Length: 509
Image 1: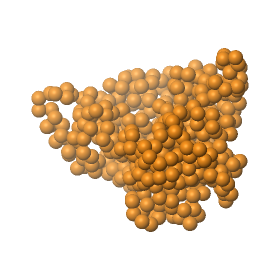
Image 2: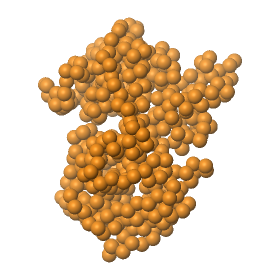
Image 3: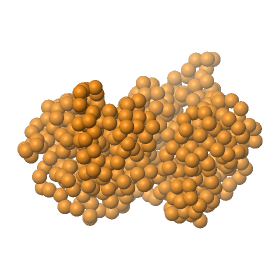
Image 4: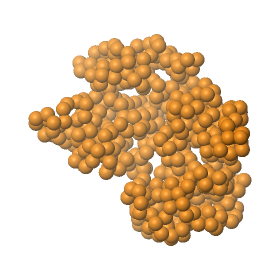
């Protein structure tokens, strides 16, 4: 696809410091009309910081941001003003959606642009949004409450919000991190159509296949600086990955498993409590020592219920969950942790860490009553700091130190923190729920290596992921969940994506 030479956005010499940390170091970026620019880099490379400066959430220490007006003339944007960015035609869709779930899709789109009860406003808004949908292909039920929409539909509402403001530049931060492969393909179709209509798009992602599929140009950041720039047509996965990490990225090899005894078993489990997307119907499967089981499925088909039961956040309405042949009869996460169960939660920010607590506190949080970090009822701060310092080095958690608040870490570094907390206890059973969502290629390889190493030392691992490439890289055996029912798809070596996809859709392979 060709794009225009007309520049719609220019960032020049952008520098941003957080204390001693230089998040952006004299960065330049240009975006042309009708171009899809992929912005890549390791976690903590400075991508999100740069976009937050562009959108006015952060104020740069040095540098200038210019955006084209309606006539195509570049104008300097005042720093630290989201309103000015919006007025300049810049829209941003964050990885974590900012939607009012009790309002309809249409009301969310209008929110912040006009009074929701303005006379005649809703009809005019519906007409305008209808035109945008017709041009973009962003089909969504505008009248349903956002809480009732799928993750993919919520993302479409977010994009429609931006387009409703007549943006000329659209920024998408990890847009496919919460989408199924089918939803991702639908998004790419929309992005290509929007670019063909003249929109400039900045696409932040860690998924190299997607970047190669949808972008025109690739800009790679490393350590807050520009590491390189590639024309997508001339690039390949290896060149991009090596540029991102600054060295060759080793591929993780999975040797055949040698499964041992059953450590956790679901026996005809039914779960109706919680949301409909957590409900389960007659689920039976086993997790064995020395084996990685991959759970595939379209989001919202019961994965949440399985995770809640393994985490001790729920108990079955009928049937049994057996841990070492003993039924779990109470919802008690602490007891399961003590019994050797560890979890990497799906929502790392909401369920994985306490943002206002330090890295050291978050790593020790599940063991603070144990002998490792407690002496006569008092916390052993020295032991906590020692564990955190070791984990920071071993897991490459990029932060100022053990005392840094978790909320200051990038998403990928939060995931590394959780990984350290999970694996340093050498648990018997590991629940890895979306373990590499939003991680760069180097961090993904590290997570995969450590999960396989945990299997090899005898742990039973359940990996829940919506990324089939990840499951095929990790899983010895596949389970597929659809509408609350689980089918055993068999050994991964005997499967292909098509067979798994049919089961995900509720069809016999």
